[in-house]
Amino acid sequence: MEQATFNLIDAINCSGIDNSVWGCSQGIESTKHHFGTIEDMALERMFIYVYRDEDNTSFIPKTTPSLTLTLEEEWGSGSLDIYYI
Image (cartoon, rainbow, N blue to C red; front, side, top):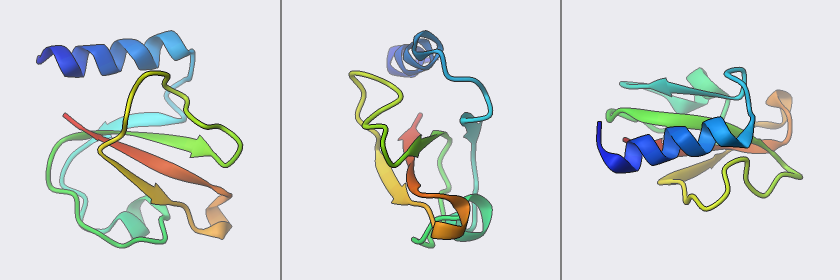
């Protein structure tokens, strides 16, 4: 495991969020269908995803996501942060 990946997982752990808000994935053909985002794109690389509420600037302090996607209104307001690992 690379140091950056370890640091990200450690930051998630220290933030106190549970696994209903974040997870690991790879090979998603459609973010729109899989996660409910407005943007529809394929993600081939391994990544960690974190759902973020509209009011929450960041669940994970001191991190910058590789990509941030907007959730469709029917899924609730907010966004999905993608961190490539």
